[in-house]
Amino acid sequence: MAENIDTPPETTPPHGIDTRARRGRGAVSNAPGRYEALETVAEDDGWEVIEEPVQIRTEVREERARSLITYNRSPDLPFDRSINPYRGCEHGCIYCFARPSHAYLGLSPGLDFETRLVARPNAAEVLTAELGKRSYKVAPIAIGTNTDPYQPIDKTHGLMRECLQVLWEHRHPVAIVTKGTGILRDLDILRKMAKLGLVRVGISVTTLDRDLSRRMEPRVPGPEKRLQVIRALARAGVPVRAMVSPVVPALTDAEVEKILEACAGAGATAASWIMLRLPREVSPLFQEWLAEHYPDRAKRVMTRLREMHGGQDYSAQWHKRMRGEGPYAAMIAQRFRAAVKRHGLDVPQPELRCDLFRVPVKPGEQLSLFD
Image (cartoon, rainbow, N blue to C red; front, side, top):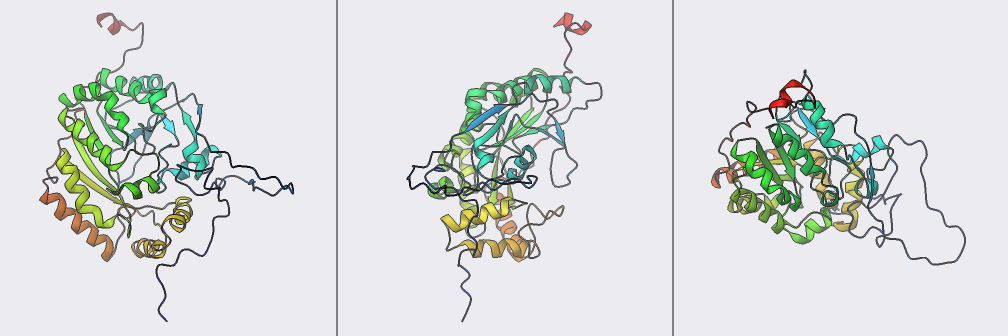
């Protein structure tokens, strides 16, 4: 008898949380981070009292940043530095490759990642200081490559606008990646930066299916809202890249062409794609989510992913981790290239300008007298 490739994973989440308590969240469980020696497990206390589960709320604590610019030497990335005003992300995307970073805080990459957040209120101050160091050499700064700077808490904390104002004041180039509509609050700054060739924005559109998006990215604006953001940015003269990311086998892969067509119609001028990545704790979290929401496709999804990573859920090899390898990965790449060419999204984009940079001047220094 042939094996049923659509059977769900055999394991069940050992740290599962009542569905009523985690309504509107992405992760199914909240297993402790990999650096924690002890773990907390809920036990029946023996009292026969039925209690309603308490809805998990978002908690935000503040952290005084000592440094902000993070440097990398990855050959897979088009930038060598980035900043993150927030740790954790309320958007709750189940596939987020940044989830494992929460373990460094002693928190779970599961529900903690999307409900126990950290804001860095002195981000703009630290950024100014770092740009003013004698050793600093200007190059585009990326924002949103780890956690989304325009996640819901930015509406009240406003850290992204403060950082953007610093970059504009000193004419520093920036590349922003987001799924949030909050970026339109900063359209006034972005418009001015775009006129000088100092900014470009990537808008991630994972699917055009509202229901799938709501399940997979529970607190992200719906697909139509993201297309509206592309349209608004394009009308303001801000270069927009459509990011088909991540491509999820057996869930979103059939939509590649439709997503690119919709984004091009909204005004995007470039495009990119990344295959689903499941590093460290993301793999079990994603498989738990599949078992709950799409049990009929779970094994098919994981089989495709393992085919692209030498039998593993994920491989971190340079030049392969973003796209995978093998026939399936090659097919997605071919379809993407054809669609991009068809919709005029394959035009080379100009480099962001670095020649306009103004070194921050410390209060009291001679040059500040001429401001």
